[in-house]
Structure formats: C-alpha cells, structure tokens
Length: 245
Ligand SMILES: Cc1ncc(C[n+]2csc(CCOP(=O)(O)OP(=O)(O)O)c2C)c(N)n1
Ligand code: SF4
Image (tube, rainbow, N blue to C red; front, side, top):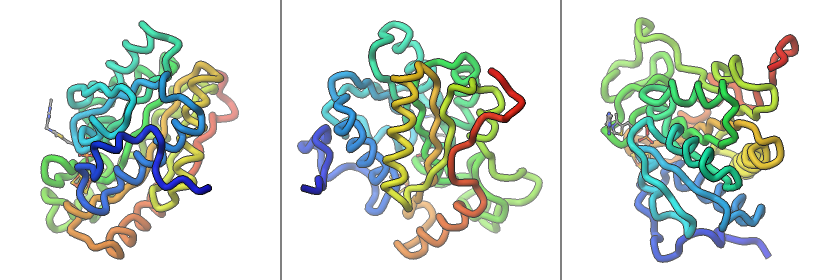
C-alpha cells in the first residue's frame, strides 16, 4: 500500500501552518517518511530555527526544539554531545544557515559533529517579508531588490560547496530540489544514515519555493525553481581527490 502521510506526522496539527503550496511542507513530509522507514520516531530529536521553519514546531509526534535565529546548529550539536545515541536533525532556512548562523554550521562541519543539517533554500528571508538573502541569485527580485539583485551584492551563495572545503571526507554534503520529492527522500535518508553509520556530519541543502513572497502561482513558482536548479548544482558534492580529512 502507498502511504499518503507519514506515521510520525502529528495528525492533530494538520492542516499545517505553512502557506498553501509552500515547499517547506513538502520537504517535511519527505522527512517524515524517512523517519518512518528508518523506524527512528523514538530516537530522533528535531531542532528548528526562527524563520518559516518554526512553523514545524508541532508538525511531528517526536520531540521538537525551537531555537533562536541562527542558533539551531549549536543547540543541536550540544544536545548530541550530551546524548550521543540520539539521532539529531537541525532544520533551517538559508538566512538561518548561511547568514546569522553560518559560523556555527562551518564549525560543526569542521569538527565533523555527527548531526544532520537540512537547509531549505528559498532564496529569501521568507518569514520577515521576502528580503534578499545570501542565496538570492543575480537579477532575482525580492522586496529589498525590487529591480533585481545587482552585481554589487555578489553572486548567490553556494553553501554546500563552501562547507565541502572544510568538512571531513566522511561527511555527506549535497544539494537537491523539492521539485523531485523522491530524490529529496533519498538524500535525507543518506544524510541521516551518515550520522548513524559513519558517526559523521551531514549537510543537505534543498532548493524550495516561496509562492507568498515570490508572488507566484504554481506554474510561476516551478519556473523560478527551475532557474535555481540551473544556477545551483544538484547532487552530492564529493570530497576533493587530493584531500584526506
Ligand atoms: C537575532 C535575530 N535577528 C533577526 C531576526 C528576524 N528574523 C526572523 S526570521 C528571519 C529570516 C528568516 O529567513 P530564513 O532563515 O531564510 O528562513 P525562511 O523564513 O526563508 O524559511 C529574520 C531575519 C530574529 N528573529 N532574530
Ligand atoms: S512565507 Fe514562503 S516559506 Fe514561509 S510559509 Fe509562506 S510560502 Fe512558505
């Protein structure tokens, strides 16, 4: 039988709080299926950021910890240090992970902390009204770049590629897109298995849509997502051959 909803999904809190068509909800559903498949409901501790990720605070039946903006990674890492047998997942937006919380993500990768970080890249600060984020692409329109992001603000940030440079070779670092939910599920499973089986860091960026701030309908959202998919490389980012970290 094909399951339509994860078993670890808290049914009492559905319909959820995300805007209609939001990518977060599609991604969180895939995460739920992975937790079911790996039978981790009792083992997992889920840490969420400020930003639209906070709307997941009651999404599942398992324990979820609400952290401050950009502080999800150190909170998750601290918990893992205290409870090494638990499976620890941090979930955040591109603002939370690549702007205010970047230093914590980099240190966790550098130390090879055995946690899984899932970062949803919708190219804007969604919860605060759609401002430019580090991942906003050149010429992309946001509320603070109404005529398109200018060259002086730099290119869109390639987070997984940056992290790969300092991460252990044992770490799993990848980017995927919510346009392919099955691929999202496979990548999340790989990331969590890296934590459990290799006792290593894992980082997954997922390209996503924000129809509310993008002011797009379903077709327009997926057209803009396609542009992100051609700007940002989709797939695993393997260790460089010369490196032995
Ligand atoms: C220390 C601090 N600075 C700024 C804010 C305001 N703030 C709340 S959410 C947010 C940005 C969220 O963007 P992102 O992390 O990309 O997540 P999204 O909402 O796009 O999913 C900001 C700047 C805050 N809550 N705390
Ligand atoms: S503002 Fe954007 S990211 Fe936030 S819930 Fe709505 S559609 Fe999703």
